[in-house]
Image 1 (tube, rainbow, N blue to C red):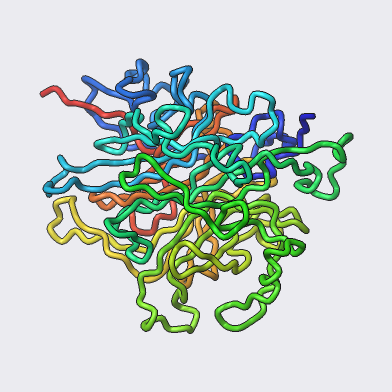
Image 2: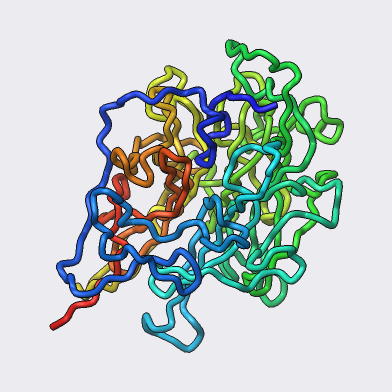
Length: 493
């Protein structure tokens, strides 16, 4: 049976049938400012399919569409794995060997999506997860889907699909992207020759009771009998030599995962009851209902230079993942630590709704990205400088408001990756009628050579449609983003 019980997952891909929230005016103005080129002769929109230019390019600023910052949409190919929903774009930029200028620059986007026939019986959570694919770009705005993928997948263009080889696996029903780490970016996790390291989550066909994800004061007829598949999500790792086809790495969990939700009754997790933090204190971990959307931060300070005074991260790797706490049903971002990127120890909650119930994330915190603080150096004043890492870290995450049930991108800062100070909303929902008026989230940041910071994010419209958009911040503080003009213009002299 289908049941309506709210945005319990903090997901952007949920259909209206699953939401019990009633939208109300919040009085919050959306950040829709843009930097628009004065050249008007020719314009190209970002691609919706390989080599497919949006036919509505000349209407990019039309108030009726208001989608000028969309760079990637679900495929229009009825056979494509992502023709219904997409989400969680993770973008990296790198230079081709032997090129010292922008002509050798390439952007790569990994993302997840599902097709219109995926979960036809409605047994899985209504997310954007399904399979993971890839797209490329020369400027970060105009994208072409990759037709290449893993030869072992049942659908073309898929880099990592469903686990059809291990029926007991945690990822047989749907998979979703967390993060991709590039070759040589983290030497401690490299194999000989260098690899791409993908952190992802997945769910299987195990049935769990819908009631365990609901607040205790919510009463729904038939709830006791209602079940859902694919909710007991866990986190896995996959490796690739080319960034196109990924192969799974077997984790320590019996399901093959490297991170599973903590359950005090699980005999494989008995040792976690005695886990201690870096300061020696007993952790008393809260029980979790799922683990998803992993984000890994690498601490580049050498171990012998880490001062344990609260101002420095103490471990080499920190994984942040979205979860729901079993006892309180609170949506929060948990943290785990490790020394090699493969084995992890839980450390409890990293960031969660404020205890006093205030703030635009009082309905839950989820899906984050972590970046080092950095300053922009442009000594030559030519608009093409360099970024230099500084002390501290920034987290950008989804906050869910109890006021209207909508998702916004929020930020927090930390010196040691454990204690976080919230900074508030940095990207609000779109204006009424826009493509992202119903929610924004799953942020990912890219610092550009001109000193600006670009955010790729997933947006959702009132009709449940999803797409990837871009927003920019002009200064080092990165506390406010405005939607970026994604139209490429060519001047005629």
